[in-house]
Length: 281
Image (cartoon, rainbow, N blue to C red; front, side):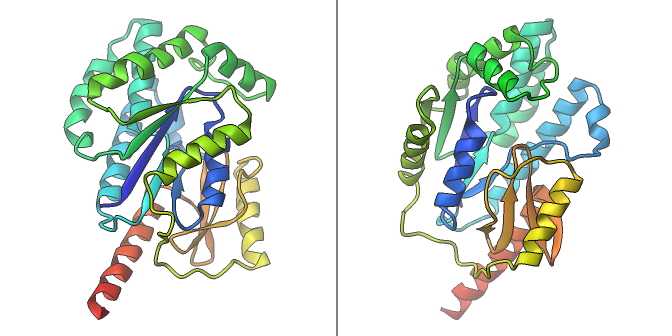
């Protein structure tokens, strides 16, 4: 199956910024999947936190199941957050409120997920105080409970003390207090240790023309996604643009969110093409 690298850590660690840079530098060799977030206008945003958590879990099961269908070991996916983010969230929420969501989620989830291995998990380690300060300085809208320092401390505790309980051994903690260039170099080196630098995916790609790029940016503006984190890059033959919380693609000239449904379309097309090439070899 494909190679999967998970990237985790508390908010404010610079994870998405670093991964966007690496996605550009390793275009065609390592595919970045943005963290799972509800899309603008989603009715799920109005549900109670526990129900939202259950939906996120189902979306993670769906995503990891999709990745398992990619039989080409030359494909490497970098996941901006994994299902462990859901575990960390419920673990920290229990610590903050006295609820008991975490044990129930682990019991429900463990049989589905741990059958899908990670080549490596990178954890962006940032102190809760510094992470929160960074988000405040860039004037993020920080909803509860992410604004609570005790919640953020419990998140950090999950990665340092609870994650090993899942039997995950290939974990690397990334010091995020260094300069961005140094962090990028470290993370890129860890990823290149997993993939062959010579490997590229087999999908042909035509650079998008100016009109197509404008369509993506117009769709992003309409959905208030903010500034892009990358230029338009090739993801399995689809022009792709990354933002802080979402990513967009062109699908038959139409802009769409790069969500699980779009990922399924890309994987189906890639598998069909790979089978065709194998049959003609």
